[in-house]
Image (cartoon, rainbow, N blue to C red):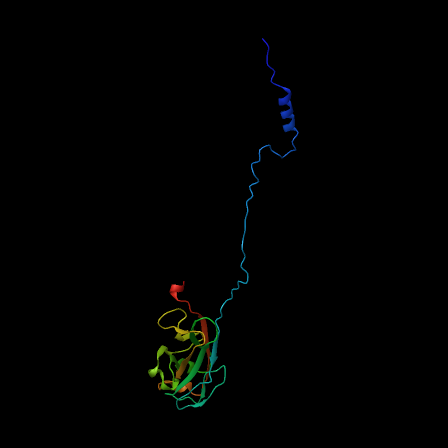
Length: 213
């Protein structure tokens, strides 16, 4: 019986042609994995932060009572000498929002220097009114009634957080805040010729409503 030989000349030539292909080139292409793409750009995007800027003006300062009083210049709100028991002294602050964001503010005070017992007897109040000369009884909003000031800041009016007692200003708005000092009739002889200096601070922060997160 004759056997058929499998390695015919044609088969040998095909095998030689495959072996002769350059490295990395396959007989059947499976693709490079790349595809057409496109993108668009948007330029000129700009973000900026707002500002909280509170301004104080005592140009509307008013005073009352029987003491010798002087119209004070910035940064003091009121000054007085020769206070007598029963006298009331009133100063006014015009608080303005000169920033770009709504804000809430509050007023605190402390005694920075004191002579004798005067600082222990003076009573301080804070209120909001169109005219401070009308007194606390005609106030639109009050807080800090009859506060005795010590070496630590005491809050006279306003809230540091949102509540019914907050003082809020939108950008461009202003509000008159009245600060009153009263020497009671019961003040003893020991306060005669005594002096006390008071520092007021008006602090503000951005007003954020709860629903705003």
